[in-house]
Image (tube, rainbow, N blue to C red; front, side):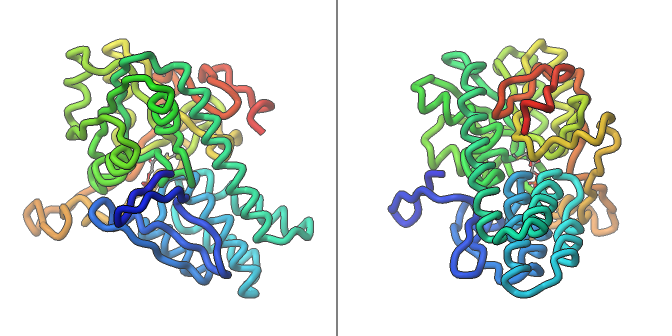
Amino acid sequence: MKVIHDGREMDIRALWYQNESIRFIDQKILPHRFGYLDALSVEDVAMFIEDMTVRGAPSIGAAGAYGMALAEITGMNLEHAAQRLKRTRPTAFDLFFAVDRMLAAANEGQDLIDAADSYVDEIAEKCRLIGEQGNAIIPEGARILTHCNAGALATIDYGTALAPIRAAHNAGKKIHVFVDETRPRLQGAALTSWELVQEGIPHDVIPDNAAGHLMQRGEIDLCIVGADRISASGDFANKIGTYEKAVCAKESNIPFYTAAPVSTFDFSLTDGFDIPIEERDQDEVRYVGSELVCPEEASARNPAFDMTPAKFLTGIITEAGIFKPGELDQEKLQ
Ligand code: MRU
């Protein structure tokens, strides 16, 4: 991804392996500061996933893969490392997919740094292909709504929902992106907007509760969001608020797509209600930054994801093509 920092343009990923450690862009401090944090152990990686230094389904998967490589380097029992990493966040399937891939690689006697590097390269390439596939459904002049951050930060590189948007922009299409701010952690306002600024892609950040209004007034032509876990039926979990946007889009006859690589598909599930939904600390809702925004006595609920039934989807953009939810081809997604 293109990052302009201190007047210097860099082409970097959300995380990478170097000198027996994993370097992460610290996603907690964006957009006003830019910096890195290094993980030297499995515990560091697990804590960075939990505190959202790294977030977004494919990037969490990449962190899990490199975490397993660190387990090998530091001599930690691989099963224990896998259990610790899998306990961090429950919803994104990529984490489980990646960690199991590393366990299988270890059983085959592969070097886990090489295995993690090739896993991460493979997922980044799939995201690039999602961009190529998804560019086809973006018309010239399209006004596109996206939710949360499904950009390069969330996916190692390119993005899932943002990959087609990047590809359309790079192809010279005049597009405009509406970015839901994405309460409570503001991944849209802080991270998606930051990525779009780096690329010079025109956009407006909107309050989460403005999307229905803009759809009803004909100001949005299509919606593209990411996914944290997609069932075999096409029901999918994504950042809290996605379901509401999909319902509004259907009401206004606006095409609604999710975009994800194979690592996000959990073909063992047919019913989206079986996807585990993470519930986070209520203070993420009670506070905005350091400011308490409700009475001290108020309690809050903080479900981090919701489930959008497949019937609200126009299509699923993958590296292998765009599928209608009822026509998912597992064979092609390998
Ligand atoms: O809680 P987060 O920030 O990890 O949630 C991220 C999302 O919901 C993204 O939309 C999803 O991971 C898809 S990113 C490719």
